[in-house]
Image (cartoon, rainbow, N blue to C red; front, side, top):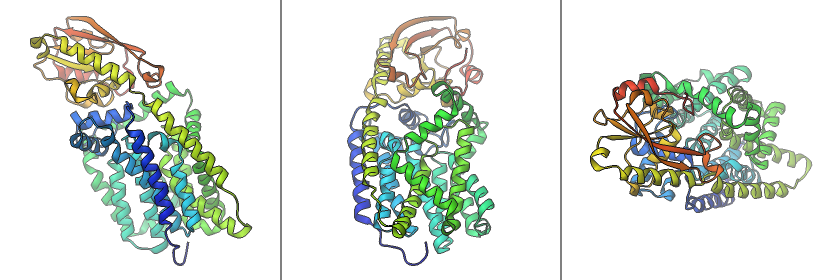
Length: 487
């Protein structure tokens, strides 16, 4: 970690990143319907604002730009995600170089995120958690580089990256919190007294300010997301420990193995003491995610950096004790990553999205013109609303409204609409209308199409007429954060 840096292993790292990019661009051409990506596209198309209930606006903005450049193109939508996925690979190699890793260590570090099963699955889906690994790795790389050089400008750059990450997902604030605690516990505490560090923090908050202001103006609905995520995970997994095991399983054997090696080296080897805060922060974050029943992918952004430390630690072991074969683990990891990439096609089956959108579009078109002009399209839970808002433009569906999750904070239907075409359970809406009748039923074509049980295997499209309550009051009374609507 001292002395001149080794040459960057540009060719092998670039080849690995290039293969990752090509594979994901190919996967991006396969028809898909992933809810999280559809929600980003739905918000970008119809509800773009300074913030939203469950995420800041950067990812929806990227979706909006892609959809504006090439409307309805899955490939264009995937480009930012693919760039981020390949960038995380390159950054892992750069972190290893920063730590004194030779070409072999840099290549091994790059292979970690390249063979991650989770990255193989969602590396071409435009979601906040696809962008996070590159952003967190860039931020931590700048911190590691500052520890070597003492250049305060790197802390300012880290603050800028932190702000961009905050405009992607607020979880970067949790990273900042555990890093601060770790620095207080194991040092170097001087970093917390560095003026450039506080300037970087100020820059992060300045960049994140619009999204934070939106949250403040709307009563901090993001705070309710923890309960919603916990409820969702309980329904899917049953216990937080299972969520954690899922997260470890999809890390991939190489990435996980390197991360464990990195943690052990940081905690036990005195030579790594200046960077021990990385291990302490990672363990604190793991405990926080476990206790809060967070998503299985919440820790994924940490693995490229921990893996880079592990790759260099293995290099040091190799230099002391002779070479060790790594190709069996690399081969197994690559095979599992390939299986993960193939499974993404099944996970993102577009069957439900296509069935819901086409049936709703046909039902909407079948309404008399005069009635359609005074009818609002509403869908609950938010899954249905997002799928409808992300439907192909040629279906000519109006903007969907809803009361569940983020949709409850979007504007309600215009007061000129006195009827509702509702996709979902009408129970909570019935007191606000004089009549309701079912029109069509949409069945989920496959079990995977129910998004792990988050929606019913079939839903009915209803026409509710005779509204006698203002939409604004209705939305205030019915908006909620739970994933499924409550009776």
